[in-house]
Image (cartoon, rainbow, N blue to C red; front, side, top):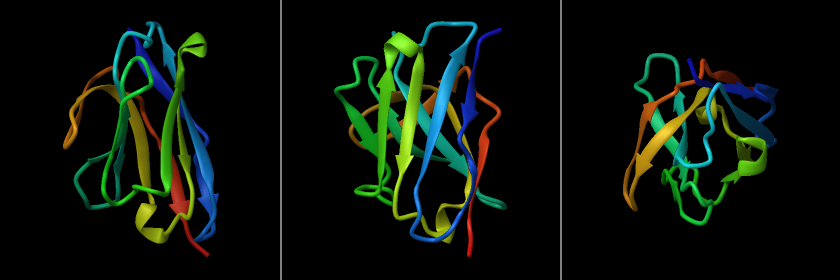
Length: 122
């Protein structure tokens, strides 16, 4: 059964940076749009960023625009999320999945990973 495997989470101070990686396992992700999603304690899961299979079209939630950058390397079957200027509000479990998206939305549709915990705290 294919799924994504996330890595790179951890504890970071406010204002710091982290880079998350998402590796496809058991399937090839290069034909799919892929998204990063996060779920904070007690809150619903929300889309953070999505990227087209070719890498040339992206979507960002308003809350992360200008701070986060999604990218992919299809040769490595991987998708990345560079997170800068982190704040405590970014604390959540970050997961990736195959995604469908447009200019105003992004939704995960399969191959969900188990997630990586990002904690922003001093």
